[in-house]
Every structure is written in structure tokens, then in C-alpha cells.
Image (cartoon, rainbow, N blue to C red; front, side, top):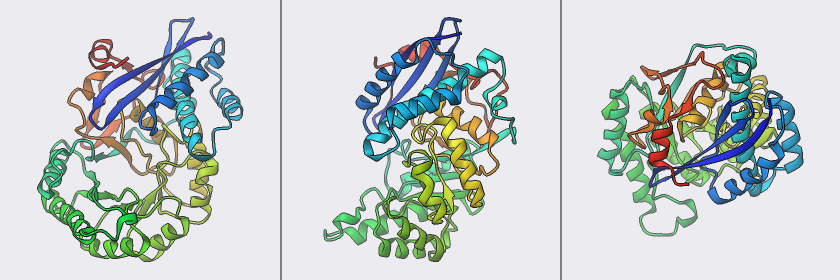
Length: 373
């Protein structure tokens, strides 16, 4: 079996962005799926994928890690901002290769990775893209919808207006308090038994982050994600050690090299590699192994489409230090129809599939209805 060509599908997901899916086709009639959404520059990612396509033609797709090594070395992708583009393209190809390898051998991808450690994967609902009403009550209502859908953990992004580089403007303190009010309303709406996660999107300086962390203490947060810029490793470590909050981060880091300082310096409590950007399933498993040596759990970042979610499910099923997987809740009403079979989510857990490869296919009719090109 050989790869014949690479196909790119752009899907109009929502006003917050589109989903980009990759499909590797073979001369045996099998195809594999991957996802390259939310890189920060869709045009450059598509160009990178178009460059990778000819390099993959004629290759046996079952040699997943050998292909990864060759492509990663050739592209020299794991450095700087441009590295994220190349890493996103490689990550999508890697997901598709695991899908193809499993289909070729008629086994689920997790079996090729050594077997699954769990039959179902705990999810948290990321509410950001599904929250149109950004008032405190709007945030609370979005969280309540997720809880009513069975999720036992929800993530809010309440500090939209705050930016530490503009601390001199009028209203900085007011906007910070508004974010806290959103979280207070959310906690009131979901009660004390539901886990509440907060993504700060790097909006604070260190001093403000400490103040906000203290004010949020009564809300009993599950974690306090990226409160300061992610390259401020020492500041993150100080917050981890002294804020009283569980610090999570690493969603945009690329490759083992990118995660190394976080792990060896203890920058965060919970590491968040993204299967779409960090280097695919292959590299995320290696990152997880490094983190395991430091007794650092991983919670894969994944606020995108159902293909990357399922790639994250196979990753989560096979690593020892997994804790919870991100799920983009409420972004589009037709998400569950885009893949077959649909995502099997019960009481906030997604079932690990036993079908070959990643265990899903794109629904051609739904894809056609929402495809951009």
C-alpha cells in the first residue's frame, strides 16, 4: 500500500474560525484523517501541507514514526513562530498516518501504540467559542448548558478585555473585576460539585495574576491556565509554587524541545500539549513520557474539530499520566453529524473506539454542506 495524494478540506465552523482537515489517500482505497485547525495562519498551514503532499507520495503509510522522523528532520520545524506552522502541518499528517496504519492492519490506532489504559476519556467542555453572550449571566448560562449535557467539568475564558500591555488605560481594574464576576456567576450556576477551569489567555502580568488568583480562591478552581505569557517560565513557576492555584499551560509549545523547560523547571502543574501543533500523536506521546518522569500530568489541549478530538482520545487512552481532554462545546450545532460514527459522549466521558484507525470517517454530505474549498 502506498500514499497517492494528500487532500485538504476547509470547513466553515463558526465566526471564530474554520476547521482544516487532511485526508491521505492510498492505492489500496483506504484513507486517513488528520486535523490542522487553529494554527494562527491557515494560509501558511495549507501551503505547508501542499509542500508535504509530494514528499508523501509513494510512501508506505504504516511506517508512522519513521515517516515522522524524516519529515521533521527535513523541515527543521521545531523552532520559532514559523515552526508552529510546520509543526501543525506535520501533526495533521501524523494523525492521518496513525489512522491509515490502523485501517491497514484492521486494528484501532491505540492498539498500535501498545494498548489502551482506559476505555473512556474524561472531557471538559471548553465554552469559549460557544458563548456568544459575553455578559456574566451569558457565561453562566453557557456553563449550565454544558452541565445539563452531562459534562462534569467546564472551562471559562472570562478575561476578554484585559491586556497587561495596556495597564495604563482607564478601566483595566474594572475589566479584571468583570472577569471575576463572570466566574462568580458561573460557579453559582453550576454548583460546587462541577469542576471549573479558567483560561486567562496570557492576559496578566505577574503581580496582577497573583491578585486575581487570590480573589478566585473561594471558587475552588480546577486550574488557572496561562495567567501570564507562556514564555515567562519563571513567572509561571512562581505562580505554581505560591499562588495557591493549580497552573496549567503549554498549549502552543512545539516538540519535545519546546516543552523541555516547562518540565525540567516545573513551570506548571499540568502540561497541555496539543495534538494539532506539538507534533501529532507521535510527538505528544514522547512529551507525555518526559512529563511522566517529572510526575507531571498531561491534559491535551483541543478546542477544535472532531478529528483532532479523536486523535486526542487515542493519545489519552495510551499514556499513563493523562488527566482530562478538552472538548469544544457548543460551537456548531452540526458537529456531531460531521463524523461517522458520531462522538460517543456519555456523562462527560467519550468512549474509546474499537474500530480500525482513529475509528471515524467524515460524513461526505455534511462535509459538502459546510466545506469552503
